[in-house]
Image 1 (tube, each protein chain N blue to C red):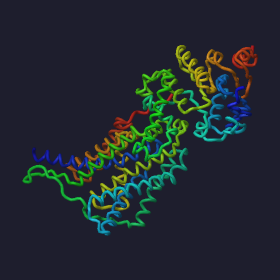
Image 2: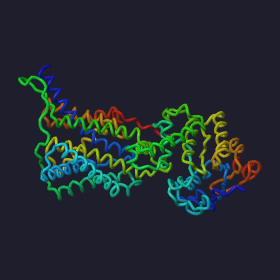
Image 3: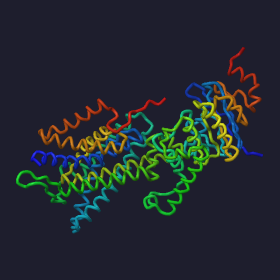
Image 4: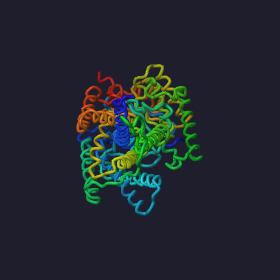
Length: 308
Length: 255
């Protein structure tokens, strides 16, 4: 293969890595929107909190003298998912549920307020500056001839792919097969009717926030380790990107969120391959606007059918 | 002696200055088909909305099996055995027929997340029971062959029957049907007619019906209430209603 195509392959791999983490976060937006028609703007902050908890747990375990990498990562993952889910649940309970049934704009404002609140609460307790972690997962595979261009897949990237794939598979099984998943789909179609059939829809809504937060925490762990750095504001831009991914794929659709995330990640990486990397956001959001102009419901979203 | 299942007294619903329903009384006994008729805009659906907990009535009492249910939330009322359908079909269109039937039994599957995660024997048994129950009712409404089809792809008459079947798996004692025959062809109306009678005679539940199709109402109702402009106008058996001059006046206007 030529040097150029190897370079493209490298960018594709990098793009899919970032894209799959966008997809993990985007699912939280899309599930909540699918059920209560609300954009949870504090979702990016849950991702940021997941990153912080990962860093704290890793630092804690290392100071206790635990050196086994798999053990550290698994404990960090479990703790981050649990803590972030608690945050996700609490945010819904405190800031959104009391406002349900009011004008749509009101929970949206509440969500923006929650987002700023969480950014600053974490900033005050953990400091507003970057917190760095030494690389935990190092090394990787190199393909191609070292003399001209080498395509590398780092072990961290492999972990990101593997964890994302397993998570998505489990989520799909949960939604399509389990009893609660069935209730989630019913709520997404007709919340009022689901309620009328005697299902406690508040529980189902709380569950979607918990699942979304747990997935965001997984993304927080993966991207935190990938970049090795976190600050209280990383949730803002990651949340915006994931929201874009959800809209791009068709908000309300879980496969759409995954597709949107991957497309966005690859687009960014490919743009960075040819232009100065500052252009990647310009192209990514330009793509979003273009797709929405021609397909307002997103790639996999179904067009709203007028109810008679 | 059949017992009183639903006893509504002086039901009144005001929206600001508008009195939509004014002093309506209704009685439904066990194993009875009772119809509510009236010209368009008479307040029939508002009565249903008050009974099923969509609205909290301004005044009046709603007793289900001698217990006050006025003011309870819609899901609490449905859990007490009073279940309704709507004028327009409200199925989960993107889910399959069998899934629609299983969702309706969600709360009867009293299991927790852990047992669901590990598929304990108890969880499997409950799932199997729900499945058997769903299959039983799909057979009753003649939809078993469509079990794995998306509900939205069924014909309109089939969707209506699926809606009734979905209500029935929640094990109601009183089923409220809001214009179930609207939009059905004569053949489908006849099937519906037979189904409603079967629900009363074989499954021993009561049915409260709003309907415009007079031949359906007159043919199957044990008792009929007439409402006009939110106010009760008359009640009695089909023959009494047919010959009541007030009713004829309300429908056809004065001579």
